[in-house]
Length: 388
Ligand code: GDD
Ligand code: MN
Image 1: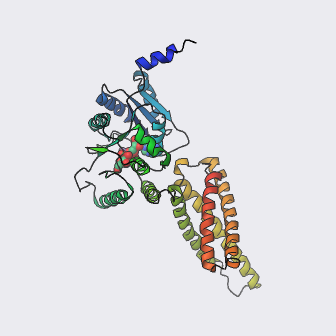
Image 2 (image 1 turned 120 degrees about the vertical axis):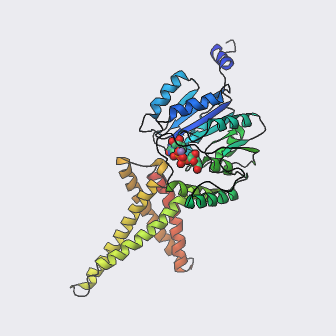
Image 3 (image 1 turned 90 degrees about the vertical axis):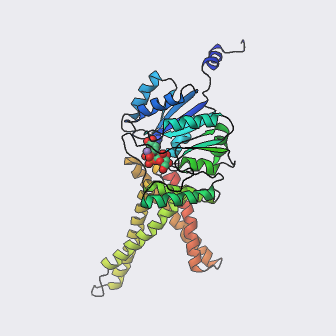
């Protein structure tokens, strides 16, 4: 062997790693994606860059558009995820397969201004910053949003200020760049949950970054629809709790526990209904036997309805990035019933043990046992139903 492989040697001379890897996450952005990629490529000009589109199996022509673009633009790459969803985890996937020294992310719907993105690239590549972000709010207190969204945005910004080591003026921004080192410092603790990837990165890194900001407003979406909804807000809350507790309360577990609380209300509502429906009164012969049957039926129905409720709500919220559909959902439901039944038995034994052997007050024993079994339910159903 002569030592140098001619193929890789020539590749590293002519091509080599790009300086900047820009990730664009897409879900049904077929209308906008071509012009977004072309515009930002033009704005980046001579900067050696690659653009990685991470598409979550869009049902429109997004992937086809990107593939056809890649034919004429060799710096454009497409990565399709089939069983996963979510803007944050898509961005992480993109960075994990990127080659650049600097890593960035932007939206695929044309809302981020290419001029601002060029300014970001120049700023991060100057070498004296770890993290640079496009901000809508530098030096301003007015968010430009109306009513409830304005209040929501301010509350979110204040709450995020508590978990961040860096005074970002727009922690919800979806357009920023960072050094690979800074990304790697955050990587082990990233949750990948939800939409707020800047927050996830900045709250996960132990480093206080040298940071810069570029002011730019969001432009109009070029066709397609926004994917922002109430679940994005729930995800944000869970992410903040995880970061504020130093990871002790995992974001997904927080969502799972929140869903569990709604399940308790469903359980109570079903019991209440049954109690009124089945209350047949003393007129029935064999009244006591009948009553016993009614109780068993009521409790069973309440357990079954609330477990089913919990499964579907968890599938839509807690595990929506791994959402089960069709036959997989049916098996998932069975797995969930199984996990929770074991959880109920465990809870029963723990409660009795605590009350009788540890002499703990029955109410405290019951609540502690329920909490412990919910931890079991979480891990068991995560594995048995959603297979993660
Ligand atoms: N791969 C993937 N998977 N991409 C997704 C998903 C997903 O599940 N959900 C949304 N996206 C992509 C969209 O296709 C779009 O390119 C980008 O993420 C942003 O989604 P929008 O639905 O356009 O979000 P928005 O306009 O409401 O939110 C914008 O403003 C926020 C600040 O308030 C985005 O810039 C956010 O990143 C930003 O946090
Ligand atoms: Mn958008």
